[in-house]
Length: 397
Image (cartoon, rainbow, N blue to C red; front, side):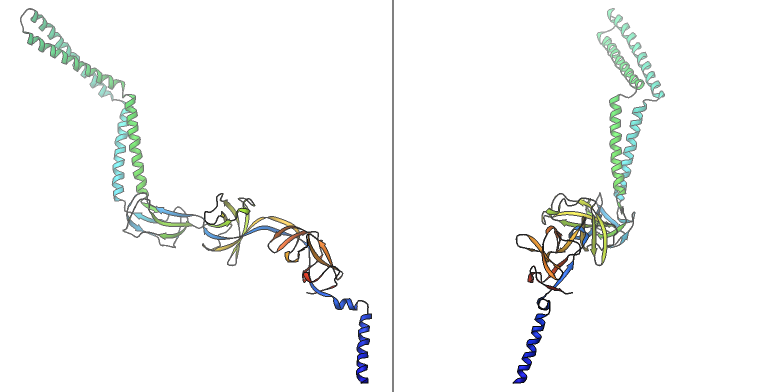
């Protein structure tokens, strides 16, 4: 019994000693908290989206005229260079049509040259001789008619013989006038309206030939860029219609297509920089195009970003960070902010909790830029809702 009383006495003395030790009770009641020593820092102001890598240039190749495929010289997935022949059309009929059009153009050109240059000197001389012959013939029948008219007045010939002489005179007159008209045309050259008609005929024939020649050239389809064959849609010997896709090729360049929301429209413009990442690859790029019309299905606005280097695989899904600018301030976890009508946080000053009113300048994700804190403040970030101003705390790691 005496032993038990002695033990209780020792416990009482120990408790009294602790109670009498300065600060001993407060330390025993101290609450553990985690803190973040805040500091001013500069961070990116950016928008985060998901995009898809596509070929910058995708082309569908087709013949301008229909026919039978003569040869297919590339395979799907094959790398090609500019000038590589892809597919060729059997062009025999086109060659015939081109030759005929060339002949028609040359004939029209000859007619135009003749109209522009006028008649040759020998043609003018011949026309003048024809006029002289017609004039001599007319003079002869005129003299004959005068004589016949005298004879008829004397009763030496019949009225029928006089009429025959008059008919010969009329025919001679007509032939003389015709010879003069021919000479006039030859000597004066081709009329302006005839020249214009000859010019129009030549231009039409030339256009027809150029069209046939271009169709013949287009019977051989070649790539106009370095890239890859996406697909070949016909085999050798098959018939293909004019304008129907025959092959699909893409360039080596890449473009990232991203759909952005309406609220972010206007936050940036063409030329804005972006950070792109996928499969461990991080690349930078530039916004090159922004659609002004939303997609009918997603209601998002498509933008195109051109990467600085083509390091992604076509079809890859990439994380896109569009850089809007840079901001300097004190950034804190949003979970450390409390509100009872105003925003505030707890900080630790000499092991004691102190309340500080703050202003939220901007919220981005799980962080907020706050006003009202100073560089070096120890912000309570854990157990903040289990403490109150004036509480004594212990900072834990």
